[in-house]
Length: 375
Length: 189
Image (cartoon, rainbow over all chains, first blue to last red; front, side, top):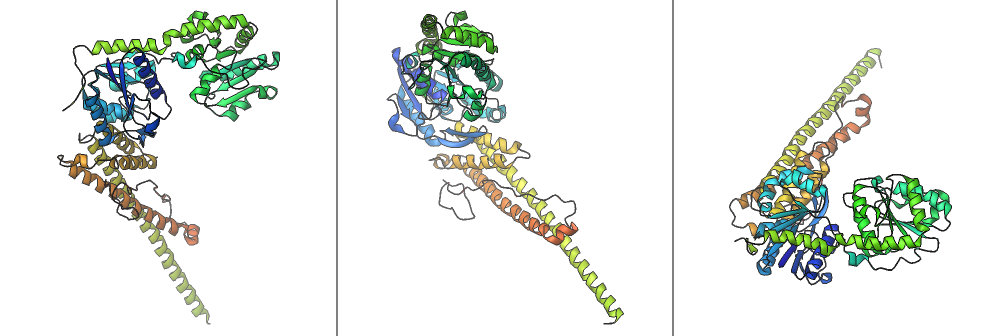
């Protein structure tokens, strides 16, 4: 199948939507399909050969902040030319309600169109104001995919209609091999955490309480914390004697994030709720890190009821300390959990997710014919 | 000087002082009235600008991405009550971004109603620029008059609220034909 993917945001600016499209495009090509992506880009030279640049995105106030978007007659004519010359069997647009390339693609194209909704947008007023404008372009979409329940809810509330839920994939091959960060995990062992430091539902305070116990019991044990948030504020919550053994990296690049998963003996996901899927957990499993996670429904299902990782009583720092302690003392159990996790995460791997997406493609392609530009 | 002359002089000074103070109080009152009128004009200019922007957004003349951007910015500006400066500045920035897109004007050439709508929007944006200038001028004069020691001492402004400047980004220069540095901004591309 020949598929045209439309990315609304600058390819060379890091972002979840861009990563999703990159991984999907590569997975589809691995499955033998032809893929072309059109995307705004600031620097054409760093683009992979399957990406067609649509010019620079313009910073403009949108939805209460400044977004970098591609709009206007020039962007529209570039999308039109890409659709006309592409010979696509199907277009797959991402975030079509954002005023950028995806919306333009819906406007200029006729034929099978699939759309994926990524964001959960709590601000409905703008969508309301723009509804009549969006409606005629979005009516052309044959099938809709949402990456999360929150994205699906946003869609249903603001635009009506339903969507198929296909969660984000984890690109296992990007995660499975990486060198640990220099000096990690170290002789005394290391525990890892990844997530927003100042978001209580990510559970960092619980892990810090557990580390008070673990750190006193085990000399040399270190805690590696990665994720956005105020580093100094987080450091102040660590008791003074343990402070030099809690390493706060803040936000890091994608490569360093992958290396961080490979830098610890035990990875903790002490979330207290609000996780619909557990991307972080799946990434840690793909990196082969032995996992200790809260006993949330979503985590229990990702960890196969505890066979692919240890579960502890949600919110219970003492139970977390016990579970981590047991694993630190048992290298064999760690090795077997690591293997089990790497096997269990396969169902979230991009080739699997891409097959789910392909099934959606197949339901809309027969009978509708190729993608053309509207006259 | 005789006692009579001293009394007459004192009365004359008191009368003159009274006339002067009442003239100052009247001037502050007139300045407040000018601020009120300028404020109403500014309010009308802002409302008109967001209305015409919304009309252009929903006219079907623009591509949907540009339309959605413009509709969002205009809608936010219209709904803002107290904290109005940020959404109005955002509308200016959105207009600037939209009008400075390559080919924006040429894509509308010959389209029915396009020229009138663009001219109307340009006019409305220019009126915002002017109305804000006059309003801030009136506010500056009023604040200066109220700030003098005599006005403060005798509370000549009475219970009237101190007027505030209205600070937004309303510069549309740089969107096309080089009109920067002039007082006549145009949404030209």
